[in-house]
Image (cartoon, rainbow, N blue to C red; front, side, top):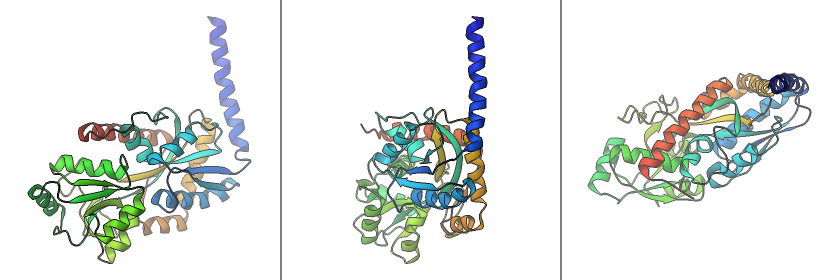
Length: 323
């Protein structure tokens, strides 16, 4: 028993010193930041913005790699199975660490156990819009229309089981209405059809839809965010419109594989926080209405637990389950 205790104590001390030594020389080669979605979207935008500024601070390039598929699952799983040395990171989202684990029956990673949270980076609101042909000027009018004509109006999402799908289904459940779901293979095709009037409604990240809103090609009805947008100050949030459960937009945060040394995690956390203070980073964040979310690894871990619990409730109540 004593021998076993001494071995465990020795191993724990070894891990601490080894981790500290590793962090002192870290990084010695470029770091790969996996974006689990296609290039050009909000996740990709935030990742590249952060990578450009973290690299010089760490003395090595931070290279963004897009690995899209299955609502972010493929890219997240690749990072979960990577070596826990700090050289492969994930730009995690509410999809990879909230909606997808709740919706997919056979997800290949454990969102809570297979990652080391580093820091949240930014929250970007999503917005529910309708095509101008839809005679609804606000969320209350859309609810009234849907109740008068159940199943007549359609909404698009980036795909079955996507974050957009889950969020709209949450709203439909709370409002007690029906809209016909039209899943797409990605947010871009859904946005194109919404602008063309092929579908009646769409929920998407604000940066993706803002130019269409400003041009009058889409009409915004509600913002999924804890606060109003500076870019659309007259647009109420879902919470203000009577849906207090819907008060959190999408977030984007850094994660490493589980068992990455604590000292490496803290070094990456410090570099990310310093990068987020860069004036250019702040200016670009404001341009897409991003809300800074810098926090500790422990605080980010709690946000992930909250997201997992929320989307498990949504998936169960809306009966969204995919193999």
